[in-house]
Amino acid sequence: MSGTEAFDAEALEAARVFFAHEVRFMMGAVRMEDLPPDDLPEVAFAGRSNVGKSSLINAVTGRLHLARASTAPGRTREVNFFLADEKVRLVDLPGYGFAKVSRGAARQFQNLGRDYLRGRPNLKRAYLLIDARHGLKAVDTEALEALDIAAVSYQIVLTKADKLKGAEVQAVMDKTLSQIARRAAAFPRVIATSAEKGTGIPELRAEILAACGLA
Image (cartoon, rainbow, N blue to C red; front, top):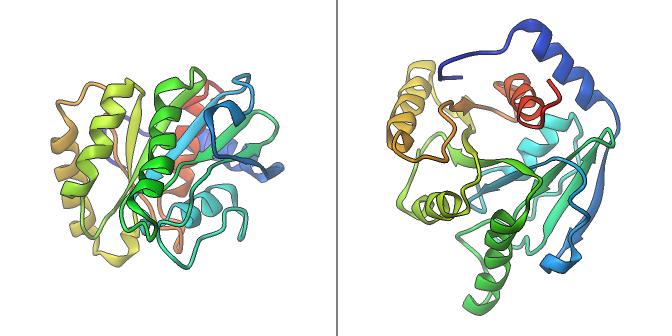
């Protein structure tokens, strides 16, 4: 983790215990009018179609198959909601890039994600997932712009950090922080994670609880 502050052992343990409680798939929505009531805090996960969103959500919740990864990148067309301990919703937004559908259909479900970001008053933070091996790419710029326009607090989460050496991970984190430094809605801390190894997962859990006012 890189930034101005870190979580202590008590906060990390509280977050672990929270996500040890029931977490279940709630629903998938294909239209804004299908969304559940805005009566609980939500955090959303966004990123390129092959960045590992499903694996990260499963790691955060400690479940193997809660969020299902598609074998064909770009197939997720719904905004999927997962309910944690009846208190927080984790929201899986449609991936961008590599969509093996028509351009019109791709725009439709990607626009749903943008509409969600702009119109969800109970959204506490969006997590933009970036492959640590590649860092921020040109294709991610549109997502950054959409988040800035939505004026939603968002945080960069690097995935697949286990594929790099420690010094390489830190270099990507530092570079990413410098790239988002002037973006007003960007949270000034980057988390490097590995769903496979568990790296950064305790910190991400604590971030979620803090963002939702439950820490």
